[in-house]
Image (cartoon, rainbow, N blue to C red; front, side):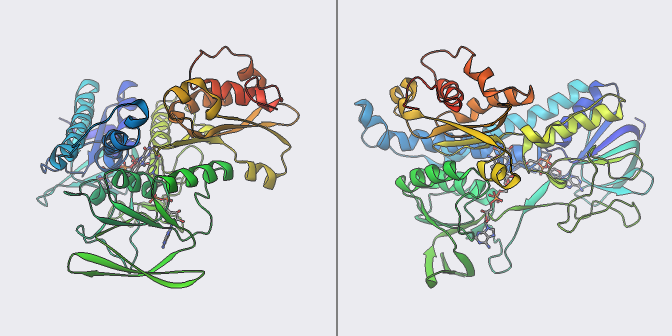
Length: 474
Ligand code: FAD
Ligand code: NAD
C-alpha cells in the first residue's frame, strides 16, 4: 500500500469520520488516523460522540427514563409495579453494547468506502505529512495533498477540582458509575450537567447542580429556560445559580465542596462530583512547530468560512474550530470540506443549526432567541402554543412545555423556534427545514399536520404568530 493519499483526516469523531467517508465517496484516496481506544484497548472509531458523548448519554437517558417512569408515570396510567430493581451491570452493559455496535459500524463503513484507518496519534508536519505514533511508540509517516484536522475537544478541568476518575469525574466517568451515587454534585448546569444529572437523579441519586452564572441555561430562550428549570426542580434536581465552587476536597469516600453565592460561603458533601463546565478544543501534540497552522486565544484552530486554515491543503472542522460544539455541526463541516477538496460546492448554514437537550422535558431550538432579536433591533412577532392543549401530549401524560415561534414583523420569515416539551428533539426538524427554505410562519400555518400528533403544537404556534391559533385564546 502506498503511503501517499489524496486526503488524510486526523480524528475519527463525527466531524472526521464523516469527512473521510464523503472524501472516499468522491473518489479520493483517503486515510483516517485516530487514537481513541475502547474499553478492550482496541481502536474505537467515532470519537467523543460515539464513545463517551452523544450515544452513551442517550442510552443511559433512555434506560433511566424507563426506571423513573415505573414510579412516576405508570401509576397515572393505572399500572403499579412492585419491587422494581436495577441491575447496574446490565444498565451500564447495555450502553457499552450500543457504543460497541456503533464504533464497530464506523469500521465497517470505512471498509465499505475504502477508507484506510490508522490507529495512533497523528501529528501534522510541514508539507502535509502526518507522523503517526502508535501506542507502543512506533512511528510511521504518511502524506497527502489535503489534511483535515478533526481532533475534537476535551473537558475543561478546574484547577481546584482535578479529575481523579473515581470521586471527581468528567463525562466519561459519569457514564460509567458502577453504583448509583447516593449524593451527586454537578458543577455546571449546562448541557452535560443537565443530561447526566437527570440520568442519576432518575436512578435515585440526590443531585445538586452548582451553576456559576446567575441565569439558568443562558444560551436558550428565556421562556424555555424558565419552564425547564421549574420542571427539573419538580423532578428533584437541586439547581443553585450564581454558585461558584472554590474548593473540592476528596476525603475517604466523599468530596467536600465549598462554594460561594450571594449569601456567602456554603459547604456541600457529595459521594461523586461531576465537573461539566464546558469543553476546550484538543490540539495537544497535533501540530509540529513549523506547520503555520494558527490557534486562537481559546486554543481553537483558526479557520475561514470554508474551514481552511490558510495553510495550503490544510483544513480543520468540528469541535476543534469555532462554532457550536455539536456532532451534526462537525459532520456537516466534514461533508462540506470533502466537497470543496473535490472541487464541488460545499455548504453549511450556521443560522439553522438545531440545538437539542435530551432532558425530560426535552429542549430544542434553532435560530435567534427573543433576546438576540431585541438586542439586534429586529422587529418580530411571537406565537406560542402549550402542549397542555395538545391531545396527543395529554394522552401521553407529557403535557408540559410549549412551542414558541419568532417571525419577522414585516416579512413573516421564521427567525427562531424554541421548544420545551415531549418529543421536541424531533419536532425541531420541521422548523429547521422551513427556516432553511426561508419559510414564513404562514407557510407552516397552512401545512396540514396530522391529528392527534405533537407536531400540532408547531402548527398552532405558527397560527398563533398571526393571532389565529384555534385551540387557545389569542
Ligand atoms: P470528537 O468527537 O472529540 O473526536 C475527535 C477524535 O480525534 C477523538 O477520537 C480523538 O481521540 C481523536 N484525536 C484527537 N487528537 C488526535 C490526534 N492527534 N491523533 C489521532 N487522533 C486524535 N453533540 C450533539 O450534537 N448531540 C448530543 O447529544 C451530544 N451529546 C454529548 C454528550 C456528552 C456527554 C458529550 C461530552 C458531548 C456531547 N455532544 C453532543 C458533543 C459531541 O460529542 C461533539 O460535538 C462531537 O463529538 C465533536 O466531534 P469531533 O469529530 O469534532 O470531535
Ligand atoms: P456547557 O457550556 O453546556 O455548560 C457549562 C456550564 O458550566 C455553563 O452553564 C457555565 O456557566 C458553567 N460553568 C462554567 N464554569 C463554572 C464554574 N467554575 N462553576 C460553576 N459553573 C460553571 O458545557 P458542558 O455541559 O460541559 O458541555 C460541553 C459541550 O458539549 C456543550 O456546550 C455542547 O456543545 C456539547 N454537548 C451537547 C449535547 C447535546 O447536544 N445534547 C450534550 C452534551 C454536550
